[in-house]
Image 1 (spheres, rainbow, N blue to C red):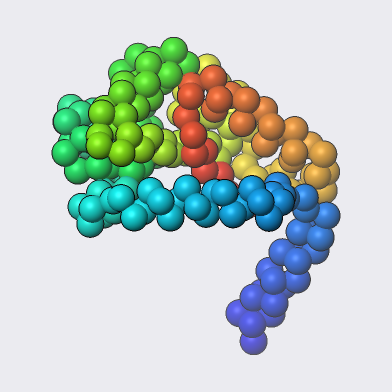
Image 2: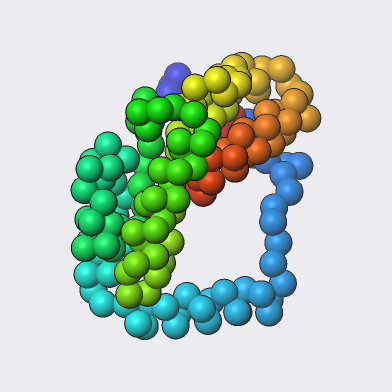
Length: 171
């Protein structure tokens, strides 16, 4: 009984928290153009390239094997918690990202790497970055404007290091 109650409570709170959400919208022509580009690219890809594009490897597994990005068509690299360049500065992160991209852009179809970064409490892998409270704490403030400011500040910090796919928990 308790499990069912908490399940329904989570569902209700999720719906309540999403009622004022705004989403990026595209018009039909833009969506059709994106679909056309995706279909064209997929039609050119070999099976190995498709498999490679679906792979995500940790930065620590690829940093000493950069040729693997080209050889296996790696689609995504992740820096999880604690996975940082040896010189942990925004500049070193940007240089590392650019190095990975340079290998990805040497592949036949020149598909760029999607780089994932664990940015749950700010850009917390980067030394000196602002670290924000846990999202549950931010949610408890009942201040959606504050939560949005934290998310925007995190996005700006991530953009300085060129990374393309910050991940964060949902409140």
